Length: 410
Image (tube, rainbow, N blue to C red; front, side):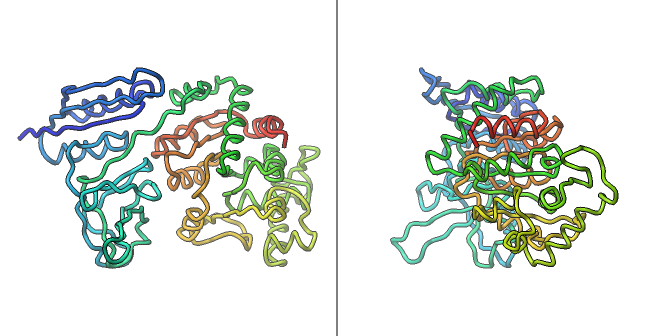
């Protein structure tokens, strides 16, 4: 039997095409809609609002559609309090738990809307009562493995609303980047505007995170990342064993994957150079110890150690060694990453797929995210995985980083 539900979406929904996406999703789901009200903002800074009456074939269909629409900030009108269920065992969410997006989210608890403290996608929502009344309840996201028996968890979609992502006003350079990803972009202009975003972030106390893949080293971009760290433009680093190993190899032996950095030609026995460097760092006990001993005297990891810049090296099954600093438990690595993203305002995903997606999964939608890769598919995949705030820059990461470091005067 057909069911009807009313949805509301508010924000910069016209110029950012959010309203068009919402209408497309309704029709693609086989449902229909009637526009009940539309209020268009008078100026570029005024929000717009639309109210839609949606008709679907049954309750199950409207429920599935509601989950899709919520990703774009469209919420059911007239929600009651969020339904809660108690987790019965550690690491297991109650059946029917609300699955989060990375958008700014609120839950209706005890008759009032409470902002979720740390928006993150693919989590549950746990309600903390904060002791005896009149303590106010708080709501936060919780990854599945962090759920504890007795936690109050939001179930179902009622009583939860999300905010459509804000459209940054006054800067047009990146606006067209959110459409089709293409290599035909004015790189120099993009670099200048990215540098402006990083300056604005630092001026307001926000940090810039760099997420690096091994290709950053192979393409000659590691010295530029080191410059950015040394000059205080990058304050957090995420990477894997491969990036760190080749950065250390480059500075200890002058090669990357056994190829001379200075001459661009392979050297005899160079294929084992990264293993020899990993072995020596393991002998010292840590990257920091190798730096202190003088074995490593330059490069990205050197700058992180000497500048007290926090880094997380997350392991994988294909790692050589690995380096002693690598967190081989991927769940523990993700938790460590979560601890470091709280005040990140800008994220640079540099020539990496898996680490970019993993980082995107834990970042709120408000973090300006730039994915730089020569492979267009990598740039597209990050947005497809749910990081709707991601901007794509299709280019060779080495020269791009050189331009960025020069622009920032690093």
